[in-house]
Length: 323
Image (cartoon, rainbow, N blue to C red):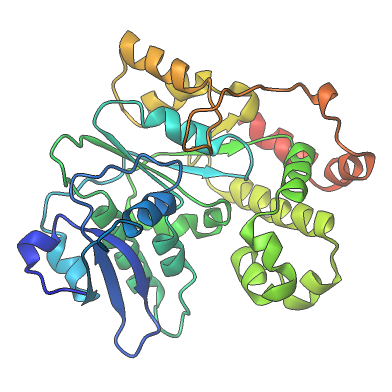
């Protein structure tokens, strides 16, 4: 750790926080002129942290977020919510091709704030901290930043009210995909919340609002279906117009026909061509690797998963697709 004045710290990046420490703190990193070019924000943090010699970092109390909010920062032009495994990372990477657009993808520091114990953070404080942290992540560090989009983790939809209260003018998209395809993908490559089912079921339960006893009784496929059902119902319960639905099948074109215009990011022919070129590659790979999109017939969904989705999820999915 190092000592730093507020003027210099205003150009640094918040990388972690702890709200339950004896003195809650934010950790900041000196990213210099590094951009968030990796598919996920945490990958950019890991690349920064792996430097030799070790990069400069400092801890401050939470008041620094408010003090530094006077520095040039961007309010988000839009939020990307999603059902998981439905092209949100691709959409984020395509939007990043727009000159001057900062894209922050699933920052764990924001997730740490969202799961804060209500005993430590009431809702009004939660909203205030969400606003301050989102703006701190959108700091104009380099000077050419003009637009700002955040792609959130799937379970963050349950916290939609916090984001809306913090930034009521910011539009949001909702990405979804055929639920059976999502369940098959989650089982093939389990996300952290599914891997934690046995080791930390309370964490999995808290993210989706599923009681501990229910998690213990569910097989992995049924737990995936339960989590997706909760998110689909949460999306459906929001007021009309709160989310603009984009389906996986609409990508990549929806990036320049729906998302960018909704976020009021100006596009010309050059920007669209850049987005089309980026869409040729796997979205979650840091190094370019050509993407081969397979049809459903080439990778059929197992019958038990298909029935599970048909019985519990497909109607919700279709209803949202019609919005």
